[in-house]
Image 1: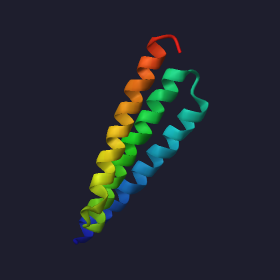
Image 2 (image 1 turned 60 degrees about the vertical axis):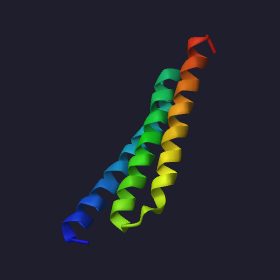
Image 3 (image 1 turned 180 degrees about the horizontal axis):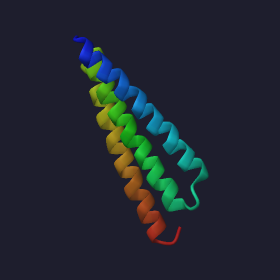
Image 4 (image 1 turned 90 degrees about the vertical axis):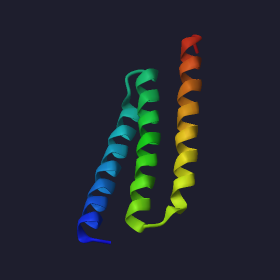
Length: 89
């Protein structure tokens, strides 16, 4: 791969990791449950992005099905948690 793609992939992986760390902070310190739910959903989304960028960086498509599974589970978890909060949980 070219140097530009490697540099951009490494920079993207670092920024996504920083986003996961900051979202984890919000998950732990969130003032109420909806904030924590959004932080958890963001962590799931960032993990999918991390897997996608890692796939590009390593030029190996083995991580794409795992990323799709994580995206589906994050979406279903967010919907289930929203229903739980809506019904007064």
